[in-house]
Length: 480
Image (cartoon, rainbow, N blue to C red; front, side, top):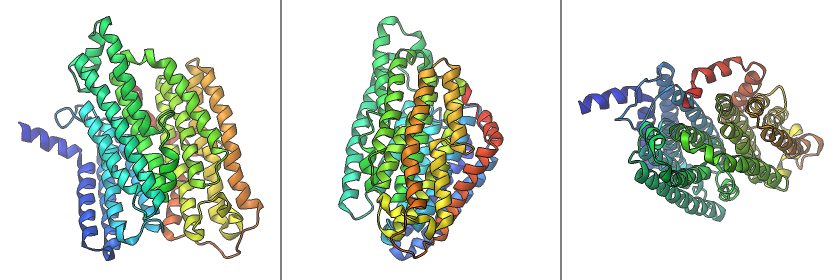
């Protein structure tokens, strides 16, 4: 009976199994010597292609797998695609970046694939223990990826990430232990039933436990006040790793947050005012702090915090429209943010500088790259008819439909603030003279990443129907 359950579970878990096996093989290749980096890249692409093919034919499961620890429903299928896409786009940047030395490139690729498995597991978690293990798989791999460059700031960033991550894990585990003590359950469906049946005297304990769980997840998604690690880690990490941290773990963190929200519905209304306040503070702090940055990676780090604030609008309103807006904006954020970081990789490779001044005159040195970079920045700012605009439209519309106009007004005002620092980079690219007239020719991998992200940002912005249909088919509203 046990072996039958395992075999049936492995059949529907093939994409993750292939990704795990490929990651371990790539790590073994890295142990053979640095001259095998090309072989590691080839194996990684074969692994991603095989995993993607399995996802193409995958069907949502109606029952949990692996003894109830994970659920491979339609929502999990959508998040698996986002996780796989973030890994694939990051791999393109990783193979072209000068930040990661060839001697550790194979190891970095293997860890990236393993973290991708963790991202999928976070979205599939159906049990508190699985949620914790998936978060730790993502976190431990990310700590090492941040510290790969042989630089003091990379070591500092990795150490800060580790310390803050350990603290958040401890907070989350304490919340889980309180929840288990109050309910005697760990599986999400059992938790929901147990919380609903609790006596009023136990509600305070559950409320504290849920708040602690929220604090642990707030670290993963860079929500204020658990954002402190983000600027230093993003600045110290290789640019491709920074790009990955800004999209992959954020998407998986929101997926797990929505899962836990679904399991603990009776406890969330009491935290509504706190979540509303943190949403407003997160988007406002992130955008205001970004105004003063001169390092492009730190600017995009604070921009990420602001973008998390927009995503929290969908969570704060707690409606099907809000949850659908979150999923849509996660897809939009994947393409427009990784596209922006691809442009950063090209500039940093050429100039060796992460200063905003490195973008001076980029339109004269690389007209196509500057044009696409402007598209990504304007999409992040929410300008029509780009993909970011439609994502914000859904989130702000969900706030208005839920009679929360303060969230919509705050989102619009923060988008106006963000427009200033995004347009400032465009001003540097188009209105100022470059320090050198030599043309900037990005590597082929960067051109592929930029092309894919630009096509998605433009096409889904102009024709959002197919993406909206995909969001509806994910049945994200069923989580409510």
